[in-house]
Image 1 (cartoon, rainbow, N blue to C red):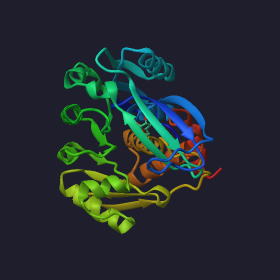
Image 2 (spheres, rainbow, N blue to C red; image 1 turned 90 degrees about the vertical axis):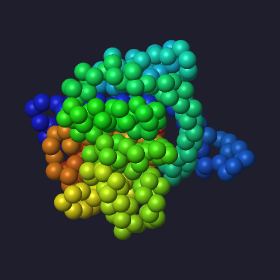
Image 3 (cartoon, helix red, strand yellow; image 1 turned 135 degrees about the horizontal axis):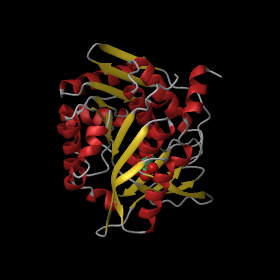
Length: 311
Ligand code: RIB
């Protein structure tokens, strides 16, 4: 898909972390120590990952977040700025340290993640309110659930009021998330999140479609359920759309969902039809699985287009 003349404008409001990732042969069980792994330290956080992914896909991106007033927070801000992302909305607090994620990835690329949110939970409505111009500027506004729900609710509501398309990636799923549905144009749960939000078992595309329909009844415009190796399924007002996953050599799935969300947001901002937007998102997500880490693995637009064209 060639980019349109004007770059789409994406505002991401969300989390930023430092990720400590150990690649090990297998994931530890409770109480178990698994040794012999290798460590990778890099920047992550679902919000920052989505911002970086959207930027690498060619969008103009601004990011609203809260980091600690510490070396990690400054490092995150600098790295985002050198990606070409607008960071005027990244606040620094003295009340908490920058968010941190401990990640273990096994030989099949599956992960376990534990997060200390720290400063992410200090992203207040006041901080977001101070970025009203960014909300007016954006074509698409994306949020996740690693920051306070009241801030997410305020941002989605205000974005809607100002005419932007809203995308909510309900990850990690939390109590109270259902209340946000009426503010969301595109909701992007994975299977587990769709199951928890809808109360409907999601073990296959049929279950995913039933869960998606139930979430639409809560007020969401379009529900996109990501199904890992089974692709993705969208339930929209005018029917369902299903896309397959792209076959790639999986090294590390960390950040794949964030890449998918960024691909979807960019394609929607470019006014692609839903099926094409889902394929673009699926290709972006697939490529993010082929390298280690979250942000280092996020692909550039040329790679996504190459995969889409089958070259
Ligand atoms: O989605 C992956 C991200 O989840 C990681 O980068 C980690 O920081 C957690 O927020």
